[in-house]
Image 1 (tube, rainbow, N blue to C red):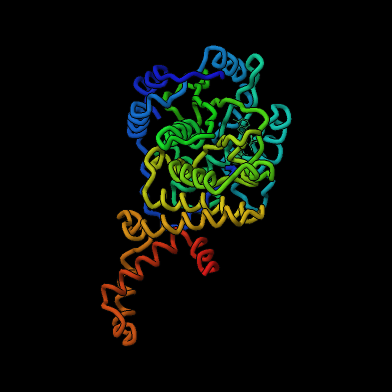
Image 2 (cartoon, rainbow, N blue to C red; image 1 turned 60 degrees about the vertical axis):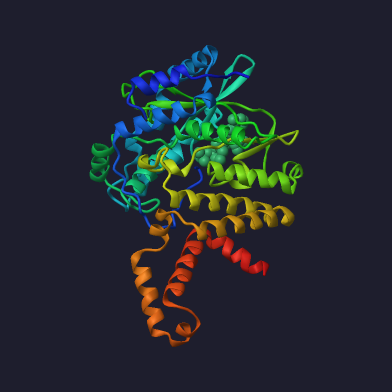
Length: 410
Ligand SMILES: Nc1ncnc2c1ncn2[C@@H]1O[C@H](COP(=O)(O)OP(=O)(O)OP(=O)(O)O)[C@@H](O)[C@H]1O
Ligand SMILES: [Mg+2]
């Protein structure tokens, strides 16, 4: 093993510095976040997160550190290209998409780097770097994530274009603070903690650590200034591989669901590739880049309604994969567990979940419907009716998919 459990270096980084997929996220819920990024706030959040989780933070060895720094220094043009913020600008003339910088990056620039550096990631960068007989992965986000983070911040939809002006405004306000890639490191610690606290057997979490890009001046631990280095685990299969799924029982799939909820691990990826499985059946989660960090204001501060939404999104991706692979026994197990959780959540929803799923207008509409409907009035009181409508809205908003599946089961 290349990494060792540690602390001092990161705490020192967090203390002295201002701290700080592709699987795309399409938020379905009402936007209740007011993203106003303040560097010091994120700095403090990261410091106290690391303080609280000190025993789960890995230590990087001198050997790995030296190999990664050498890689970065030898591939300066690559690192600058990937973190270059101007790629996210769109050409002002929509009639000439060939001038669209983002498209040029993904059509021309990225494929060259993919080949040259043996990149493992479809939308981002996971570059294997040799360290003696072992390997580590050097991870960076790409400009696509950067752009979509900007879009989330400004309340725009996925893939929406924007101009130089809006980019300038964004930069003035947020100072290039993206945490999409850095979140791999913090979510890795959360994942490690979940395994320890839940005493889960047959899990291995590859160790992960941020390393500063030597020529960057900014102290912020952001995607612009740091790369994330991850332990490389050879000889694994994606969860979707029949040989990998074969190693799963109902009990094991229940621990996977339980573990996913703790993160939450919102998407197991195409063919389950975000969860690797070793030959002996050990579960090795590998893609920790999480949607709670699309907006800097969410970094390490997951809003409850988003948390709930993502738990069920992860369960949905797992359920779909199991059906696709013909494992209805395991899929049924997930469905039962989701049903229990959903009942708990509806009986005791967090205020932010209510705020997102049950806006005031819905309540007014429900009361109006009740007053107009003599048949409903005979069956229940107005308050009962409103509560029922609210619970339906919460269920539907968070788990539209599972409601359909549960109905099929009846
Ligand atoms: N730590 C690791 N050790 C060995 N192989 C890994 C590791 N992490 C990832 N891989 C391999 O690389 C593939 C791509 O990794 P990952 O899932 O992070 O990328 P991705 O989904 O393409 O990235 P993104 O969603 O950011 O664009 C994985 O499916 C897995 O096969
Ligand atoms: Mg992935």
